[in-house]
Length: 92
Image (cartoon, rainbow, N blue to C red; front, side, top):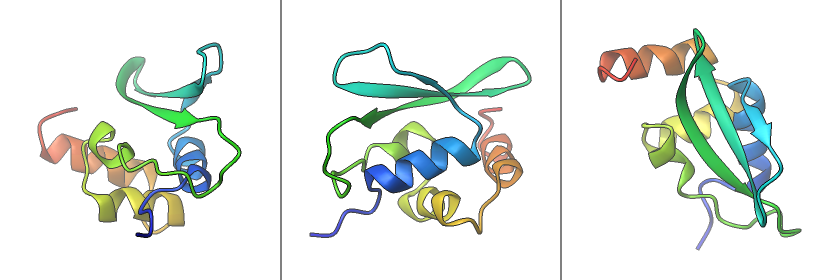
């Protein structure tokens, strides 16, 4: 079964959302996403060497569906577009 969100895509999502990465935890890094000084989401990125390692928890952690999470990593969805989704859901 193909993974929707791989480690490589999770890293791209963290970069696009300008997440602050905490590398001090054992086994995985934690990406914290802030908007106007407040943390609005966080998600784990496994440190394993397998690039296709599943990160299918990322959409849930970002409060979007798998398609929107994938679009964040592949570029069609912008950081501001993601904030708009959160506003629409009443989370921002």
